[in-house]
Image (tube, rainbow, N blue to C red; front, side):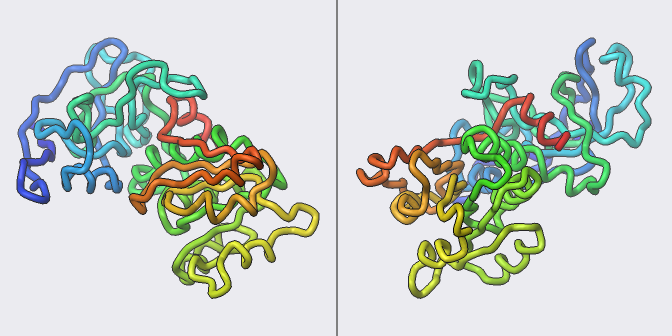
Length: 306
């Protein structure tokens, strides 16, 4: 029988165990896939630390994978004659087709939780054919596997929620070095934005500069990083159009003076565990604080085609 990796309850940090699972039979609109590579995310760490809702001790872990279609009688016919080397990405969630406002119904991310029986840390999975997207040719199988959740989160935060993914717009990306932040940087550069990055690590800023941002600032700047960033902004557009942040905490307090009237601060995570504050000065500037998580099946196709 094929194997899957699940967790067993343990004090403080759930342990991993191998579990035998049946090889499922795909239906007419489904496909049998062999998982080639699967990717860890912080979400999976939170699951093992018992910090995530609706944890399952029976369903396999991980939401991200690169897979190969395997022939099976009765499965979706349009995939039957694909070469064995064609690599597929699997939509890491279900319940969200295309609405830019949010999921059309209950939405769940796959891997390690009870709302979804599907997880990618196993040998074979059966998924609807409509949930697959061809992996980009230039990426290795390991690189491709790391993309779906990260790419969806970054694409939605920048392209949908910020309303400023346009050439010439000034975008600040905090926490550069993190997976979502790096993807936001890449998407922003591809769209012609002036992307600025922030980090507490100069080596991370130096490495990020090879990906095309205008410049970067250290969080630990002696005179304050907002002042340092303001000096870097172009004279004819000396403000930020949007901020894409994954830390929370003081992000609004420290950027509202830099953000234009009606500018946007997008929050896709709060890794600092400190809730952002919305001061009245930011309200008076019509600054928008927008939450953003994951993304739709349509968005997956859009950024894969970029």
